[in-house]
Length: 565
Image (cartoon, rainbow, N blue to C red; front, side, top):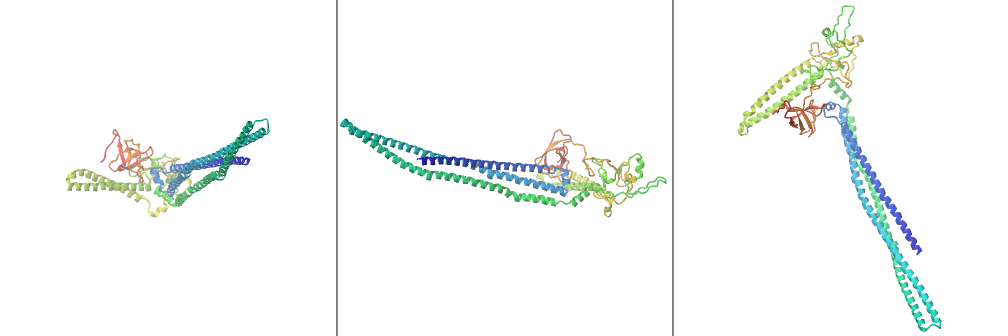
C-alpha cells in the first residue's frame, strides 16, 4: 500500500512538471509571435520612410525639370529614385508576408494549442481522481473486513467461555454459539467483498499506470513535438520571406548601378556650353596709347566699346568686368526681336519662335481642311447643314494663317540677320566658351577696365540699336549667366476662373505646365483660338495647357471673359 501511495505522489509531481513545461512552451510561441510582429512593423515603417524620401527628392513639375532632364546625372538620379521606390515596395512585401504567413498562422495555432493542452491535463486529472477514489473505496472494504474479523474473534471467545461455565444455562450457551456463527459469517462476507474489490482495484490501477496515463503522456509529447516543429517551420519561413525578394532587390540595385554608369560628364558639359554660349567674338588687342602725343585712342573694330560712347558718357565709371561674366539687368519681356540677348541665345529664341509659329500655322491649316471637308458634306447633303455657315470661319482661319505667315517671315528675317552677324564656323576656336580659358592675349592692369564701355554695356557691333547694361555685383543666389525668358517679370494676371484636368499632360515644351488627371488649377487667360489655356498652380508655377485637356469654369463677373469656338 505504501508503494502505491508513493507512485501516486510521483505521478502527481510529473503532471505538475509537465504542466509548467508546456505553459513555458506556449509563452515561447507568444514571445516569438511578438518578435515577428515587431520585425514586420519595422519593415513597413522602413518602406514608408524610403518612399517618402524618394518622393521628397522627385523633381518638381515645372520648367526647371525640363531643363534638368537634359543632363545625364539628373536623369541618373531620377532613375535611382524610381529604383529606390521599387526597393521600398519589396520591404512592404516582406512586412505583409510576415503578417500573413507567420503572425496570423501562429495566432491561430496558439488558440488550438491552449485548447489541446487544457484537454490533455483535464483527462489526466480525471484519471488521477478516479484512481484515488478507488483507493479510498478499497480502504473502506479493508477496514470493514478487519473490524468484522475482530468481532468474530470476540464472539467465538465469548461462546467458548459460556460453554465452559457450568453455571450458565443451556439456552445462554446456544445463544452465544449462534452469535459467534453470525459474526463468522459476517467476517466471511466482508472478506469476500474486500477480495473482490481488491481485484477490481488492481485491474484499474494496472490500466491506470500502463494504459491511461501513458496515453495522456504520449498525447502531451505529440503536442509538444508539434509545437516545436511549428516553430521551426515559422523560422524557416522567416528566412524565406527575405530570400524571395532578394532577386527583385538585386534588380533594383542593378538599376541604380546602371543609372550611375550612364552618366556622361563630357556630354553634360557640352550641354552647358550649348545652353549658355553667347556667340560673341573675343575683343581685339588693345593698342598702345602714347601719352607723349595728343591723346588719341584707337579702338579695334571688335572692341566692346567705342569712342562715341565715351564722349556721350564722360562721367561713367568703368568696371573691370569682361563680357562673358556680365549679368543681364533687363528683366521682363524684352524686345520682340530678342535683341537684348547675346547672338547665340537670340538665335535660339528666334528659331524656337519660328517653330512655334509653324506649329500654329499647321494647326490652322488642319482646322481649315476639316472645315472644307465639312462644307463639302453640307454641299452634298444640304439637310445636314448650310454650307454658307462655314464660310465666316474659313475666312477667319485664312486671315490667321496670313498673319502667322507674316510673323514667320518677320522672325526669319531677324534670324538671317543674326546668323549673318555671327562668326563663321572656321572661327569657332576663337569664341569664348563657358569652360574655356582665354590665354591668347596678355593685357596690363592699366588697360583692363577699357575693355568695356563706361556704362558696362556690350554691343553686338558698333551700329547695334540695343545695349544691355551689366550688373557689377552678381546676385548671391546665382552663379551662372542669366538671360531671362520674356515672361519672367510679367505683371501677375488676375484669376478669371478655375479648371479641372481631364487628362494628364506632361508639358515638355517651354511655357507649358505639367498637370495630373483630376488636378484643380486657376485660369488666368482664356483660349484665344489657338487651342491653349493659361493656368496657374501657385504663385511660382503657371503656364499653358491644351484647352481640350481641361474643363473650364469661368467666373461670370471675370473681366474680359469670352468664349472662343
